[in-house]
Image (cartoon, rainbow over all chains, first blue to last red; front, side, top):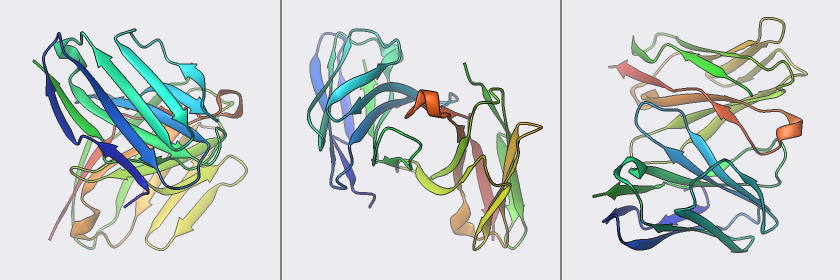
Length: 113
Length: 113
């Protein structure tokens, strides 16, 4: 148990659906991250939030929309996804945005049909 | 940008033997190098990290070495156990890109009992 929880753990959605992924951290951290993990590819950073402000958007398509209402919660809103978006989506948090240990959640396995 | 290469992609060892995983990076400005272990169905978990001001760090059976001149760092696991079986990722990041790490492709380690 890392102190970072993600729901749902598994999600199957059609290309026309709208869904949201949720992440919550109980560590009192100030920075939160979304990563995409695809088979045979390195972890890809999608978004970074520091003190609820988005500080990094790593050229992610607009069909992925993050939201950080407070420093403990992070959402990833999904709409009109493509099959190639199927992957494991990992949330992480760290004490600050600097060179600190990142704590990862267990991920949401997303399948787009 | 930073580029991290990790080798080997798969590694199989006998229980009790040592395992070594190597990573090279391209940006000499990188100064933080974490290693993560990812077990099946879980998110990555930090197991050890090293900063550029030291050449070696050890934590029980795990050690990391860093050669800044050659721009490579390695993970060493001694007296391997079946529970060490997992995917291991290296990463590199630097101050001006705080919070943004570049990950290697991962190494699948199998420890045979």
